[in-house]
Length: 592
Ligand code: AMP
Image 1: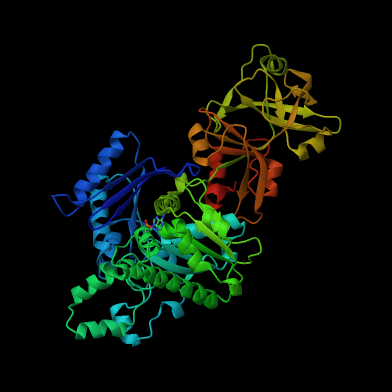
Image 2 (image 1 turned 135 degrees about the vertical axis):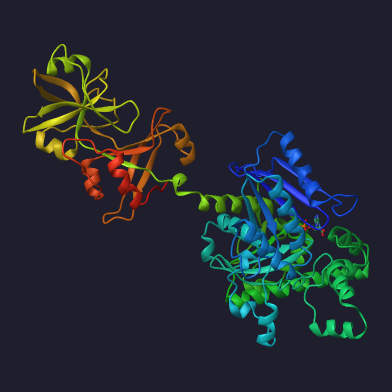
């Protein structure tokens, strides 16, 4: 699926078109940034139009749009399909993120009106932190005031923290839920996150993305008394907002700007403000690593990601040095070499003896947003397209070649259609045949038409016992070397040397179904029968794909009985029409 990921800021619109079915190629199909929104007549609408025109000229389809939304407030615990009520809720969260949510929403509105027939999904930076424990999200102020104004810790960068944590767990070969991780997203914005049981349990950004670590231009932690002092000294609220959001952090400390590359260069030349900026930054991060290890009662891995975490080996060294007491030993060579790319997104920088693993992980928030968009849409897919397979139970039956039919029913006879069966072009006939084996006989076995090049008799294992014949399990049509059987019809008896089989269970799929299930002709899959009194997983189910087929799994009566499915009328085929009712009640799905 091609997902257009939009990150609409106040002055820029960043867009990436991502093919989510090509995980091995995380490079986007298209990558664009439209700048200067709000000036020169550039609006979110015109920016979206520019992006869509570019997508159209690239001939890539847009199947869905994933929107980055910074604040999801109390309401959004995960990504969600956007409708009018979701737009209104995002709007209501604007007071919590006045710089971010309004432009996010403007981008959503522009994109939804430009692409009304494509699903739009909102992916929230706050969602990964939605299960923060109360002890972590509560500020120690008057509870009534906090409640009234919604003052609590929400946390941000959740898409990135969640994404890198999953990559780290994969690299470590352990379930994410088993790991205690400190994730450090160190970019222009920066935050730390403690991850336990696969969820954020503590994070450094708070009600707003101003809190916590030192950032490019944001202060991070500051004594709230300092803000009161500045207000009392005559600073206006807007001035304070600008000071803490735009004139602080690395830029404010260094006097050089927010980019650590410039600051590191100047520090190496002896600039004291730049040295201090680096020290304040790294010291703050170290404090959080120690604090979060303590809060979690242990630590398995530290992740460093985003512009600084992925690129500045010297900053990583300052942050992670002398953590031996925590069980983390940095390997200086690995750290210096610790390059990450989209193709190789994880680099281990801890030493062989280090109990706590240190990993540089390349974040990819757009890919994470695209994947979450796909997940939301898959969950919303209507039941008709959910992977449910109708099951038909085949009672014993036979197919005859022209010659055998004539010997059983007479030279001038032709098969008489009794009723159509579910696979297009096939039908049950009025004609019935008796099977005679060395031990016993089974009368009244129905013929299925049309006539075929080779005679084939399909029975269950139980039938074989009755007949006293051991037949092989075979795919339909594969009768060479199968078991012999004697057939008795109204006009004669025919002993066939081969043709008796126990049909291999299989699923007929139309080509489109196969695409939907991600399988091809000849694959073997598992199908789970769930929700009934005898749940069962059928393995070795052969997939047969053709444009002529209708989606349906065929099992025999023994198999149906084992799963407590209706085995239908004796000597007949149970039609999907009958069994479908059951299939609706009992969820049937492909499990692999
Ligand atoms: P991000 O917000 O993740 O794009 O991070 C951007 C920031 O990463 C820049 O402003 C720089 O401070 C920092 N950065 C990127 N590359 C390097 C590098 N090679 N060395 C030090 N800092 C870097």
